[in-house]
Amino acid sequence: MLRRHTIRRPARGAALAAATALALSACGGSDDGTAVEGSSAAAATVDGQEISVGDVQRTTRELRTFLEAQAANSGQQPQQLDASSVVTLLVQAPAVLDFAEEEGLSVPSAGSIRKSVEQVLPSPSDETVDFLRANALSSQLDQDTRDKLITHLDEQQVTISPRYAASSDQAPDWLEQSVEEQMPMEAP
Image 1 (cartoon, helix red, strand yellow):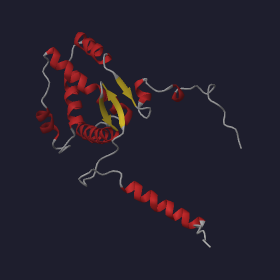
Image 2 (tube, rainbow, N blue to C red; image 1 turned 90 degrees about the horizontal axis):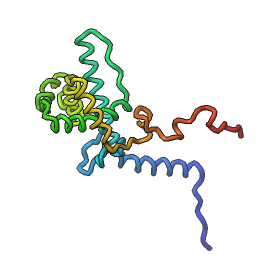
Image 3 (cartoon, helix red, strand yellow; image 1 turned 180 degrees about the vertical axis):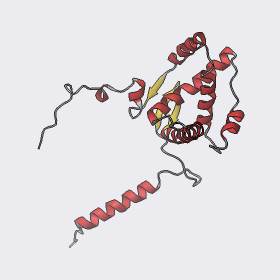
Image 4 (cartoon, rainbow, N blue to C red; image 1 turned 90 degrees about the vertical axis):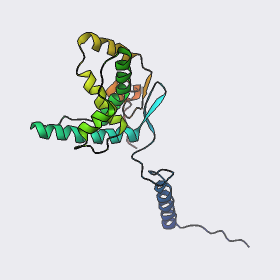
């Protein structure tokens, strides 16, 4: 006679917790064993190029550090920066740099930007450097050139994850429902 072995409830909970821990321990690393920042999930896609959640997290942290240092040097409060705004910046920076190249505009080199921020950010990401390069260019544009740049930015094919879409006017309908449109929750 075969006996069926059942796992008691507390043991099932422990087994589930152990399996979850094992599954999650595989997250957050790379194939060579080095730590990876954030998720590789797409925060946005621009003309077929993905911007990962990890890129957004790292760039947000680096730009906050940079802004805090600038504010401390000037005696002002640091500018507030959230991840949704950083996604927008990361979407626009490559297009700004492309526009500058097409128009023959002068843009600081990545090396000069890295050197200028090395006291605050010893090893900034390429995304942060590209944003700072694009920002340096944008602040020098006259109105006509700025209008051309806006047209250039509007030509991009951009998809932003719902997690970040609210700041870009791409939020799905279910994120923008008015109170009247929402289904009331019924008590059980």
